[in-house]
View 1 (cartoon, rainbow, N blue to C red):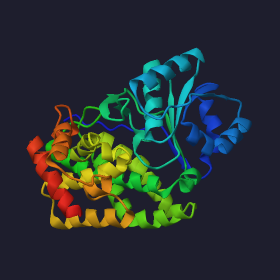
View 2 (cartoon, rainbow, N blue to C red):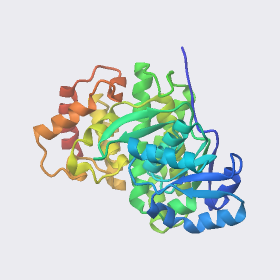
View 3 (cartoon, rainbow, N blue to C red):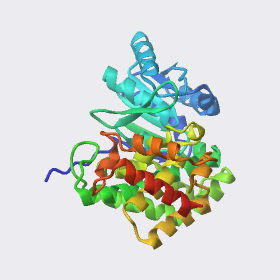
Amino acid sequence: MKKVLVSPSKYVQDNQALSNIGEYVLAFGKKALLVAHADDQERVQGQLDEALKNNDFELIPGKFAGECTKNEVERLNALCTEQACDVVIGLGGGKAIDTAKAVSSALDIPVMSVPTIASTDAPCSSLSVVYNEKGEFQEYSFYKSNPDLVLVDTSIIAKAPVRFLVAGMGDALSTYFEARACERSFADNIPGGKSTKLAVAAAKLCYETLMEDSIKAIAACENNVVTPALENIIEANTLLSGMGFESSGLAAAHAIHNGLTALEEAHGFFHGEKVSFGTLVHLVLENAPAEEIEEVISYCKAVGLPTCLKDLGVEEVTDEKVRAVADLATAPNETIHNMPFEVTSDDVFAAIYAANALGQ
C-alpha cells in the first residue's frame, strides 16, 4: 500500500518572527514579491520595516485584490516576472497565501507563507482554493510541493480579531473527522497516497488540542497577549490541521462548505465558520455516536462557531436552498466521495436538515 506524507519544508512559529523574515528571504535571493492585501500589510508594516533594516533585501508590493481567482494570479505572475523576483511571500489570510502559492507554482520559484491570522490551514498546504469573481468556489489547484517556509508570528495573531482565531478552530475541527473517514475508506490523500499513522495522529492531536485549549486561547487573544494555550491553538489551526487534512484527506465537511458557497447569505462568513457546520453535517451523514455529536455542538457553541443555517445568515431555510447546497456538495469531483459509503444529493439534503435541527 502506497502511503504518502507531505509537509512544508520548514515551519517557524515565534513571538516577533516577522521582524526576522529577511534572513529567510536571503536564502532564496534578494527580491520578494509580497502578495498581501493593503489592510494586512498596513497592520504589520512596522515589523516589515524592521525586517528591511535588519537585512538587505527588497519587497515588491503585489497589492493583492482580496480574492484567489485565475485573473488575479495571472496579474501577479506578470508583475513577478517583470520585477524578476526570487521568491513569493503570501502574507495575510488563506486567500492571499493561496494566491502566492499559485504564483510560485506557475513561475517555479520558492514561496513563503506568512499568516497574520490563524483562521485556516492554508499556510502549510500544497494546494489553493480558487474562486470565481463572485466569490463562489470554483476548483482546487494542486502543486508539486508544499511551501518552502511557513513563518508564524504569534504576536501578530494575538492582536488580530478573535473571530479569525475562532474561524480557524472551525476549520481545524473537521480535520480529525475527515481524516478518520478517509482512513476508513482507504481514500487517497491530497498527494495521491494513503494516510500514514503520523498524519492521522496529527489530525487526532489537532482535535484534542482544540478541546483542551480553545477557551484559554480565546481569552489570550481577547487581551492581545501570547500564552501557551494560544500558541498551541495557533499550531493546531495551522500545522496540525494542515498536515492532518493534506496527508489524510478531506471528506464531507469541506464539501458541505463548498456547497454553502451557493447561498448568497453565507458569503460574508469565513471558511472555518462554514466548515464547522459542515462538520456537523458530516457527523450526521456517518451516523456518529450521539455523544460525539453533542460534544461537537457544545464545543461550537462555547467558542462561538455556527451550528445551524441561521448562524450562517440563512434566515429562511427552503428546500430550494438546501438542494442547491446538496447538489454542489456532491459534484463528481467533490471530496464528499471520500466517505466510506456512497453519498448522494438526497443524503446530503436530509443530513443538512437534520444537522440544522440538532444545531438549533
